[in-house]
Image (tube, rainbow, N blue to C red):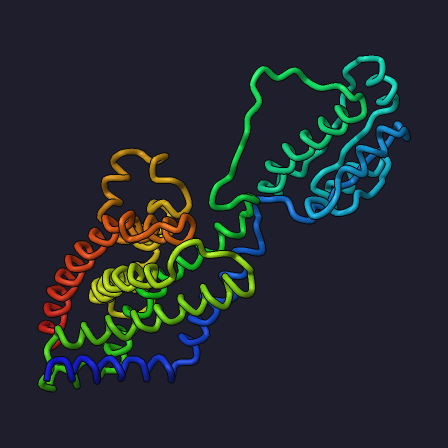
Length: 370
């Protein structure tokens, strides 16, 4: 009887989501457009950056330098004169303006060290910081090729990039966005399901029925977890693998197992947070206080090894910490069960603890409404 009640109540939640076009749109957008945007925008790398050149030398070397600024990092360099440089920079037309001085080729051949000025629009912080290094490397490479001289380096580094040989930032961005959306939507949907019952007054109807708080909570947990599980899996297959052509190194089935356990923890957390809120705006404020630290401090944006010890110790109790480690190990490095079992065990323990705490709070909330 208890299993049947949990099943029927969960189906009721699925029907409620199906009848809510706004929530359906949020789910679809979160696992499609958000993933594609995160992979395509790549604000930390150069992509079709506007650049202009002031060529006062008009030499073979200056033309060689101009031609070196090529796609996909830069748009075709636009020639301008020095009188227009400040005005164009003030208008935000270019991120970089390279000023090649007169007599550059003559000075280089004579063994002198001429200065090439690079004007940077630092309001475009991410491109300005990265592009400065790109431009220096390009100019240095072209000068060495023109003079046909090599710099004597005592040690040569042989670099091999594993798991992402081309150092493509979109691989990391897209998969991390999927991981982030799994956590966020599972908490939001579960909390919204509970608050919808309260705002519509249907909680009182449930209280007079022969069902227990455990059955109500378990129904919301499995139904919301199922929605996120299906949406995230389809996103990995359709958006990440097919549309973005991003390879997944490990087993998708093993990742789904880890995601299921993680969803058990986060949906329980959603019930716990919603039990403290009376309206959706209050629940939204609680989400800001909880989700942002979980996302930022769990290792998805910055390696946990770079954080203070006290933060690492505190965040070890968060399910997102272990889920991010598990997900990155499977999806990026192709890890198997023998490697990720500690994270799975931690998620089980944290999930059970959150479920028990949330159930206790949920019972107290229902008792106050009776």
